[in-house]
Length: 292
Ligand code: MN
Image (cartoon, rainbow, N blue to C red; front, top):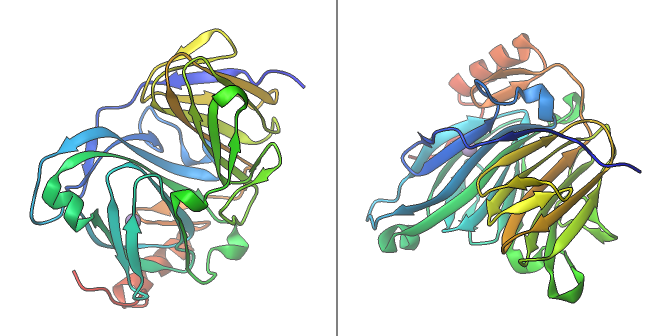
């Protein structure tokens, strides 16, 4: 086994707003960022770094919109997100919780700051990832996995060094809480200052990490500050993450699906024809109905 080399450390791009509630730095995909194929099956990553929202009666957020062809994974680090969808479902993603939504053949949903959080105001910090689906599953039935923090399986590091929350995949024999369509490891490493954790993923898996809190040193020599994203080369297997202060690191590794990607806004399919169909289905109300 050998060290997984670092390809690039990305500083956060200037933030932009999704709706009026999600102030995010985009890492995938975009200008000067990673194209969808590079981190496949992780085809979109928006990171809302810690930001204070003053109190407001009418919750900020993003109104009704569709998705088809992939999954959205929302991780709330600070604050609370409320969501409603066209199947009549809804809920709150609280601090530390993860929502794994399989849009697949199509959902309409809306995402807002939770009402009480909005009234009180407060610090908000979140990640939204889009996880691609293989062609054979793109038109399967939508589903939700609401992972409450206390139900997420975790590995305790020795000497009170912290813990690894296994959102999906596995870590040192602990199996992740979410079921996935393709092999994916999604780990939230919460490291105490001075502690280190090691990770091992196949060289062929696309692998990256995001420092959400604190700062870490990789392989003993590369310092990565808060809000920075690290892309690894597809060489070597092993990563050593050492926390130079209390740190939270989101670690992502997945087997590439390696199928053609055709994307248009909230639709990610394999061909242009499928995108045209998605737009037509949406315009004809075939994604169901959801009130504003
Ligand atoms: Mn959405």
